[in-house]
Image (cartoon, rainbow, N blue to C red; front, side, top):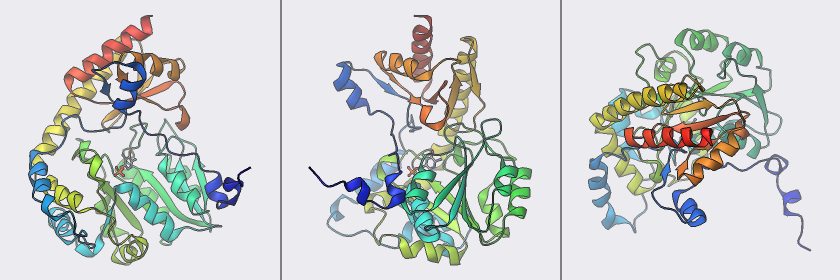
Length: 367
Ligand SMILES: *Cc1c(COP(=O)(O)O)cnc(C)c1O
């Protein structure tokens, strides 16, 4: 009999339940033998990415044998210019998931505590457990972050707090005045990761911008990504802005070549095409209205969202509805593992995809 390798793993790692990604289209094609499948399960960009990205990638094809620039200078310079912030504040990540992991590896160990909210991003507990630290889940208020309760959960052992704004999978957000009060309450030796993976989708002018807080507080890591609004999920490029001393620490645990050469080129080109991002935002806002109105017409409810996805309250167990939607060729995301068994999360797609989803949902609910 094989040795018990799970028992050999670090105690934190033993407790990890692996991240469950959205079902790939190819897998469903194989399982059901159907084609014409739409995937609205992973908050991917229905418009793809800017055409400028493809040109940039092609120009990098002749250099695949070379290591990428380990400092990612060209992308950092572009981000620095775009956001008007010093280059010393930037850390690049292999996706922003990498930023979350670097933060945990650099600032958390056994005996330390990290705080995150109920119904928040599944990767937070993963990276915390992997380094043997203790995760503290603070109950949600109206499905979102209860920042008053999260500040009250800080103990002398707290090192890191994770806040997703907007949050995934619920789409909820925290307002500026809530964040103001929160940051005043957090001691300087506690790092706050402000995960703004969906920031580009937000249209509200009064929405808090993590970079504004970074000017006032040194203990903030603002994490962003090219995976969502820029449509580069396959290439894995994320970044963080933080105080230069915090950035220095993050870069000590970063792999030397953590962002690949094509990803670096693609991200520079994507950042340079803000008209693409504007089109994405408009499509998302329109689609959000379309799906919200559609689910209400079906007698269902939803959690108001500022992301590119919507959590629908089916008022019945979500898993059977998810399975039935799969048979209709529509992949959405069950959120039972997030403590939301009666909900499904759907990514906002194109107008036609949203229509197809609503028709499939109607068919499934009436059968
Ligand atoms: C999708 C997502 C990310 C981005 O992940 P990448 O590694 O950049 O692809 C980060 N945080 C949240 C909350 C997300 O939903």
